[in-house]
Image 1 (cartoon, helix red, strand yellow):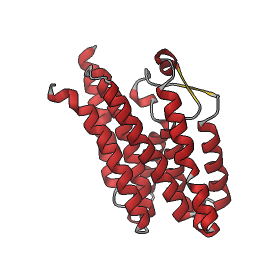
Image 2 (cartoon, one colour):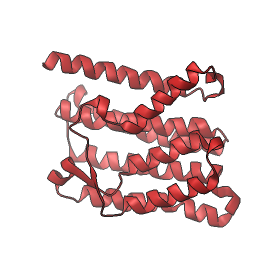
Image 3 (cartoon, rainbow, N blue to C red):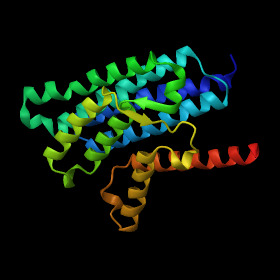
Length: 228
């Protein structure tokens, strides 16, 4: 197998490792860095699929690996993050409730993997676990300004929306600037806080997330220009 064929799987493993690191950071009280790691995982998750199609490296192994990475980074990691920042006040009950996110997420991923291939290109059945985990990570990132009740309601909604039958439009074929709205909004918020002079209050891992995202944007524009 050519080295280029392994790049998408390497990014997927990077996504998985971000989930593991996020759990560790959350356990050590670095909640904002834990949230940023989930955001970085979102970036890697958006890259691996596009690179796999671009490099003609789609495989069953890659698909299964992607699901395993997603359940850790966007299921287990956000559930620990929400527990440590909001649900801890409910004691053991809060711990059990936090564990619902990976359960619902795992079911949603299994259903997605067994759905007809053509339908997954046009729409998703239920909210993707990547979006659910990313939304909860961003809520945690700005958690000091968001009441716990709001986080609890959104957490519960994400769990049920993931396993719902609602059709969510798929943006796989849309150019990158229109894809990954959550990540783009996150980067926009980053630029705003830097402009306001409050960047020192932000987690240091944000300085890894921002260059990674913009480097990928630049690479996509260059690649698209060569193909035109």
